[in-house]
Length: 213
Length: 64
Image (cartoon, rainbow over all chains, first blue to last red):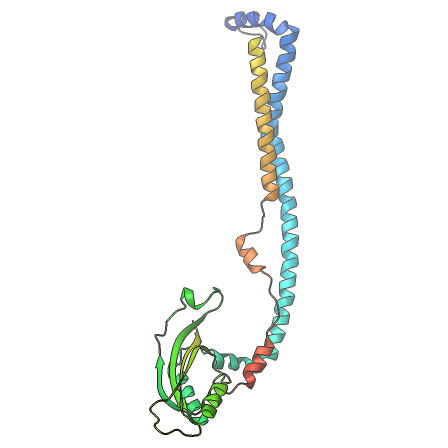
């Protein structure tokens, strides 16, 4: 009876032809080295790589989570400080809306400028409001964080030197933020007589702002 | 004999390729951050300072 582990007869001839080749010492060394490389490659790819990868991933995760935890702590501290600062300036917050309102409030700008001329004794020749953009344009702000939208206001005022001087001083002192782009002074030629204080016509090109929603 | 040497070279290059591949995979794992973009946005530092001088200056200005 044939043994369980014996090579079947039909394959025995192949094995016999291999036997002298396998018996050579050089082939033995070659085979050992070749199998060593192949086994290490397979073992490295399917066993060592996933294990070391998991170890390194977990180490990296611990490092990242520690850093995130520290940053979160710092941010919580900063938020607590911000909250206390916010509470301390709560009553001053409406000032910001006076300076930069949430709506264009163009009529209010005109009213403020008119009131200013009345209070300083100058007279308004013209006030013109430019196109009010509904949203912030790329040119209106350099930073994407700022949400201010600007619109132009042109104004023509007449008065003597003292009046114009007072008007300009008062203009830069009003709470609504108005940036003066250009100022031009021209003597009022309509005035026939030469008085002690001749009239000056002042043309102002300004920009004012509102907060975009 | 020649086929033995060829096989040895193939196995050697396979070994070197696998070794370098494993090395680069591990380097990638070490270098890649595990923190998500959302968490990165949340942990952006915040400076708890407010320009109160500007508010004081606005307070001094006239509201018409």
